[in-house]
Length: 115
Length: 109
View (cartoon, rainbow over the protein chains, first blue to last red):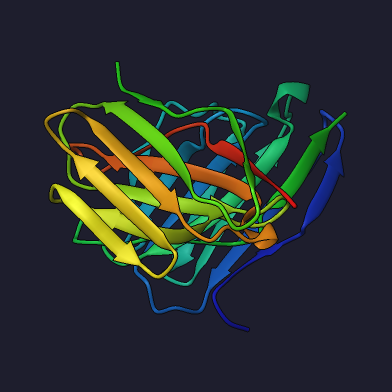
């Protein structure tokens, strides 16, 4: 495996379900990100982890809970979601945020549908 | 508030040149990025500008004017595979990326 991988690629869940999204990066980066991408809207940054510590939480509802057990893995735990949470969830990684052209490498995303 | 503006959609002809504009108003500036995103795929990095001027990379070039809060992405010799969304993002004073909604580029034969 190379780059950034995400599983599952597609997920349909009811509002009372609990599920988790997984992201893994094989690039030796030490920062990882969760984004939400809705149609015709800008990417919304949800969480940032740098060196396994959360450094950003942009007022995301508590029904989204991130976990970063090590610098290569990132999870997003979901529970009691709402239909408006249906979107593409993208994971990305980079070197330490804010240093030079530290472009972010994105995974293919998880297409989430909440019924 | 912070804002990134770019056109929603543009159409161009195969073999031609197209310029996608991006204007921004952010709290501080620490670099501007362009990403390409094909439908159903992940965004991929295209270019980075932090100083004024033009950065050229093959068929793609990106320009920045910090005093005007303005950038453009120039695509030359358009190919059908260039049909995609192009995302402009600015890194603000907190080193957080602020993203535009993207410009969907449609290439016609």
